[in-house]
Image (cartoon, rainbow, N blue to C red; front, side, top):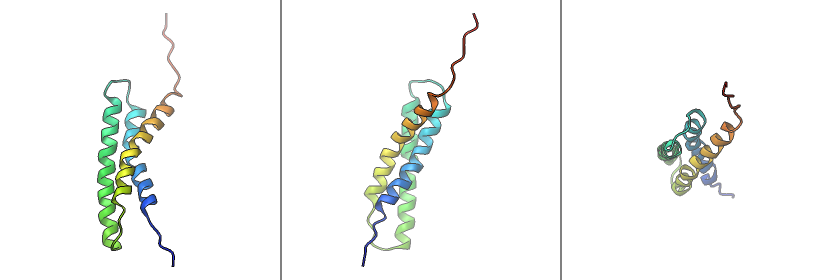
Length: 100
């Protein structure tokens, strides 16, 4: 009998959820000193909340699953992916020419 560990899938799901706010802050907002810090903090906050909600939901559905560490790792590394993704997409914009 094979044992299936949902830790990797949960880390990826939480990481994607945590990357979305960081991506939105980085992609949509203009230049600023605190832009990346606010983006990372919002991403990690959303990731931790998503990890807790998914952890509680999956604990009620299946007993004795231990994957809290993987979910927290996803919520920690997810905002970095969102920051890099948003900065990469943002560099493709055209620059305005200053009328002289």
